[in-house]
Length: 333
Image 1: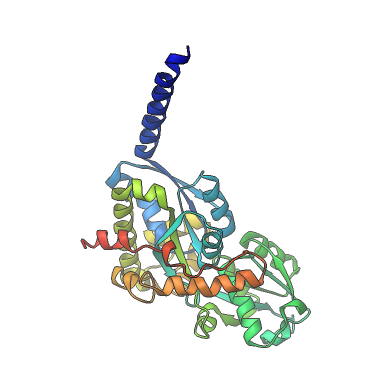
Image 2 (image 1 turned 180 degrees about the vertical axis):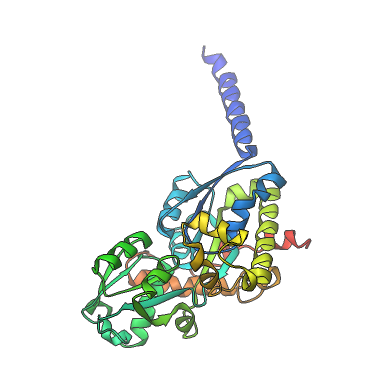
């Protein structure tokens, strides 16, 4: 029996190798998406990536970036969309991920809104008030950065961790005085509130934020052709939105697609999407984004997350968590 063990072990290793290879070549991927009003929804609706690659894509909706990151860490999800803050948290914890696409410069698409009658007219007025925001989100990062810049001690503000649907419900009940949030909830709260600051105004103070698409690094390397096809589809959708958005109405097919996948009110979508900026492929590669700016923004965000006790360490650089390889290949470089 002992003489056969090496042979049996070799068979076992070979079998495992074949199984691993088969798994690597499996044409299926699970993508964790959220409710941001971005061109990716047009790709989801069209099925163009599936048609171009033959892959089955399981689109799974999550309530926040933190949930997306946890799902990817578990191995259940290979790709996902996250804001720069949860992305940075995952990178700081050493998760094997790559940011390969900037789905949106958040610009003015996130905002700090105070409820009418709350007596909040400035950041200073938030002292002692209740503010709902998804923790470790881009909105949370900018809220804290804005408070610090305004000289407001965040410990004096009652900041509560709420996912977007929870923010909407709390706002309806009158449980919170303000929120820093994105659409579709942003449009709802603006109905009986006023904007105190936007992600764009805070970004200009040195704290820019973005929405990105990430992938498990090992999976991406094994499925390069899929990644390139996916980037081409994302670019096509971005271009369609940039060119067509001004002429679309709530009945337009692209707007209906965005509303369907985000559960937003179609009537609110055109104006809400106009608050974002969607980079071209050339802009993706620029020093603003994949060419260095994204990694720099992640470094600044990591400092904030450490101050919040959300991460234990800040990496010397975040460049290794960003790749422009798939955009370059999609451009034929």
